[in-house]
Amino acid sequence: MGRQGMRISLQQGIGRFFRECWSGLADLFYPSLCLVCGKCLVRGEKYLCSHCLADFPFADESYSASDQVLEVFDHVSRPQCLYALFYYNKYSPYRKLIYAVKYLSYRKLGRYLGRLLGERIKGKCQADCIVPVPLHKKRERKRGFNQAHEIACGVSEVLGIEILDGVVVRIKNNVSQAGKNAVERQQNVEDIFKLRDVQKIAGRHVLLLDDVITTGATLKSCLQVLAEAGNVTFSLGCLGKTL
Ligand SMILES: [Zn+2]
Image (cartoon, rainbow, N blue to C red):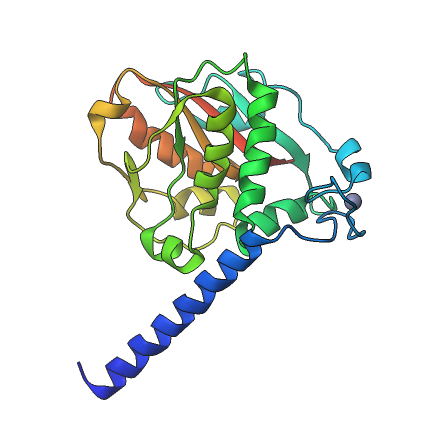
């Protein structure tokens, strides 16, 4: 390796070190301000003030199979249910929670919201395992964690069902879906997943989890790959669903 190459890898190493430190620090302390309205939190409040928690825009307990998002799925991979913790649009202050989990490295917030989702769907969701939508390994390394996995940990704690990691992998580091129309979103996520472990998935009822659902294009692509295992039933779960 030349001097230039060593310098670049050293810079990458230092960058990763600081990202991991930040991720650890953000996780170590609870924020002192409400993540939704910015007011100071008082003793006993965690992430949200009691006012924002009372006004939490919980989604309906489940969508019927005729929900618009479910229309994008073909009959082989069509999920039974779609569970969302809350609705949001671009004006909703609650969308800051998604941002905090994803970009401010509040991993424990991901688990906390995952537990809230678990409480909402307990006794209703019939899934026997959870698959968090995987990130590409490069993106996961950069972020330090997969937010869908943190949410899955919270849901798993409440429902008492196992998380299956690594049964499906993301083989393409596709660009963000933001700003794309429905057709472009579908093209952007084609062939981005690969099934790794048929045995673990065949015959199961999978709760596929992601942080948000917008058009459902990414989830559809993931479900189609999981369905290759054969005789798989699906439900979908997310923290936020756009209105
Ligand atoms: Zn608040």
